[in-house]
Image (cartoon, rainbow, N blue to C red; front, side):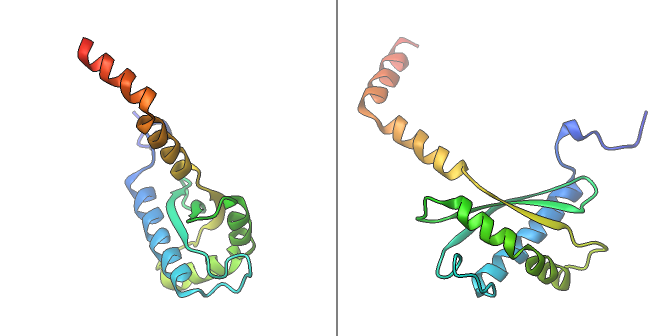
Length: 135
């Protein structure tokens, strides 16, 4: 039996820990407002998740901006600042390699909001009440 990690089982504990460490550093940088990009000025940006590659050399960062429909614009601005952010992460983290950062708009908040609206729709509530009575 091989000692290698089977990636089909999901991320390893090491990947999860490294991702959370990078997420915390990125949140601190964004909170301080160190990035001088007009597209990011005054925006409230949420870092939802950081997924690490198995070799810990690449990180995919899921970001959302509160109250802004165009999350792709925020992700593009953060991708322009990725080298700066990588350097800042390298200064704070004590790791052998600092991963390359790739920012992607996080749409899970929008999907959750749409599901919440659906469940609060009177027609859906009536259907759910009917199915609950039959069970």
